[in-house]
Amino acid sequence: MTSRIVVFGATGYTGRLVVESLLAKGQRPLLAGRSHTGLQALADPHGLPFQTADVTDPDTVRALVDPGDVLVSTVGPFSRFGHAAAAAAAEVGAHYLDSTGEVDFVQEVRRRYSAQAAGNGATMVPAFGYDYVPGTLAGAVAAERAGTAAGRLSIGYFTVGSLRRGISGGTRATLAEGLALPAAVWRAGSLQYTRMASRTHAFRIHGRVRRAFLATGTEVLFLPEAFADLGAVEVYNGWFPALSRIAGPLTWVTQKLERVPAGKRMLAAAAKQAGGSGGGPDAQERSKSLSHAVAELDGQDGRPAVEVHVQGPNVYTLTGELLAEGAMALQQGKAVGSGVLGPVQAFGLEGLTTLCASAGLTLASD
View 1 (cartoon, rainbow, N blue to C red):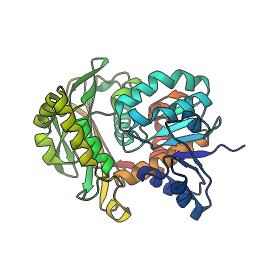
View 2: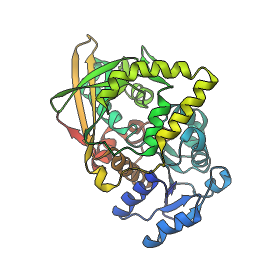
View 3: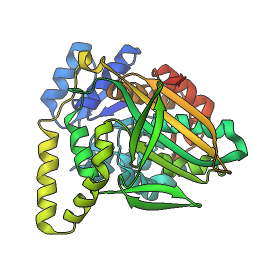
C-alpha cells in the first residue's frame, strides 16, 4: 500500500498553505483536524479524504497514521498542543514534519521520541519551515565550504520587501511571547543560554548593512552535530531594523516582569492582544516580500572566511512549500537517517539543497 501524507491542522492558516502546495504538486493528502465542518469544506472541492482528530484525545491522533505514512503537524503552540502528533508518529513508525519555531519543543521531542522513532524506522524532522530551514541551509553550505577553518557561525534572518500587513496573528503572538525567553547559542562545545536580544550583529543584504538582534533557532542544536569544527553558532532576527535598536532594553524589562505574577499576567495579555484574531496574509500580500537568510562564518583566526546567502518566497509561502516538499521526500524514501533529526542529518546536504530548490529556496548572491 502506498504511504499517505496526512496534514494535521489542515484548516489553520499554515495547514491550508501546506494543502495548497501539495495539491499544486499533484498530491492528495488526508486532511485532519478538530472541526468536521471545516475539514469537509476544505476537502470537498478537491475530493480529498479527511478525518477528525483532537490533541486532547491522543488515540484519535494516533489513528491518523500507519507505519510509513508522513504526518505533517501544524497544530501549535507546539509546547502545548504538539506532543500528541509527535508521539503518534514515533509510536506508529510514521515519518513526521512540523512547522514549529519553538526550540524548547524541538529539544523535548528529541529527548522523548528519538530512540523510539529510530527503532520504528521513522524520520522525524521538527521545525521544517521558515523556522529554521533557510538558516540551516545557508549555515551548512558555509561550513561545508570552509572545511576545517570553521570558527563562529552567525546566521541572520531578513525579509526583502514589505511586511507592513504581512504578519500573521500567530507570528505576532510568538514574537511577543519570545521576548521573555532566553536565546540558545552554541559556544565552546556546549549549548548555552543568554538574554534574547542581548546584542546585535550587522549583516550586508543586497548592498545595505542591516542590523539584527540575537534570537534563537534550531541551527544551534543541529549544525554543530553535522559540522564538529564549528566553534560557535548564533542566530539573529533582522526582520525589523528599528526593533533591533530597542529589542535589548525591551527584553531586559520583559524578563524582569516575567519574574512577578502581575508582570506575567500583563505579558500574557499583551501576547494575546498581539495575536489578534489569527489568520495571516493572503497570496497578494505575501507576493510583496521575499525571505532572505545569510550565514557568515569566521575562520579560527576570527577573520571572515565564508558568506552564504539564500533567498526564497515569502516566509509563509516558503513554510508551506518546504513542508510539502519535505513530506514528499519522506514519502519517496529519500531520508538518509531515522530518529529525530535536523534537516541536514535527515536528507544530507545535497538532498536538502535539492529539496529547498524545489520549494523555491535557493543560493543567492548578496
